[in-house]
Length: 318
Image (cartoon, rainbow, N blue to C red; front, side, top):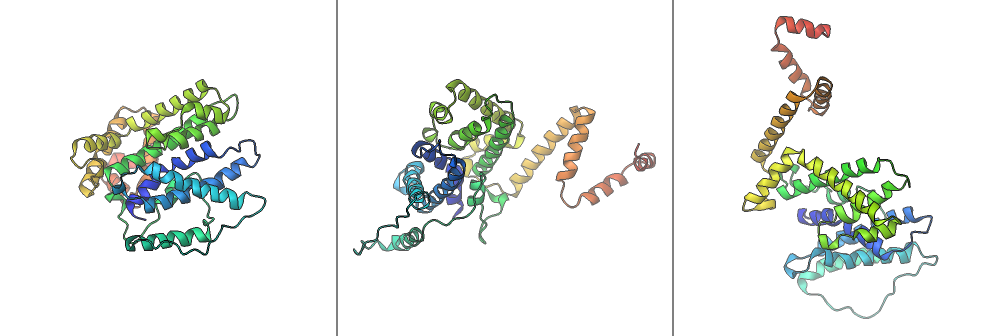
């Protein structure tokens, strides 16, 4: 897969959850959680096939192009994996229409894959990360990603952190985690607003009141906004994407990466200056844990710059 195809999969993985919620009604089945995970895998395989076949020049929105292929993959899985009696795919002896030369290779590959059926491999909630970050020999390193990709990466990380925070809050019904997962998968990780599942539908599927769902949605939005507003790199990249002619497609080269590192260093120093004693200790502990392998050399140089009295007090732990 190309970088653009992986981006399409990563940005639209929420479409799989949208399709399952809308078209697979099986909430009363005690095996629903297990079946949901398996069907989600199959839907993501359909999404990957859609990304590899999608052509921008055809003028079709990717969501509209991908949903039928997700539907086909999920329907095939329901027929072959969840039916009591397995019904093999129908075959015909008719000679298929010969595709144009430029389509023959790609169609042949897709038909071979469909004839063998979807591959069963393990996927968790981090499916987008696993499916879209398979390294290729010619893949570009992370520091050459675009501004748009870096912004999306930061946003998705903020969504995951917000989901953990909101899920951990007290819930009288004890199903907050399930509600948060539905909101994240069907709204916050779906880039196109028209494809996001309405709150009233999520309320119906989770058997919650609309007010409860709307409140949870608001909490997630506030947590995500708080995280992103506290990220100076996110704000800088946002401004750059709006002012640069290339916009979000601008590549993050080494020079821009150094500028971003400087922005973070300045902000960290500012926060450290105003932090209390305990908070400073925690910040230093985090810095030490996240430092690269040359930490020993950095410590040696810093200690060497101290006065004799300070070095003596340092060794005594005072």
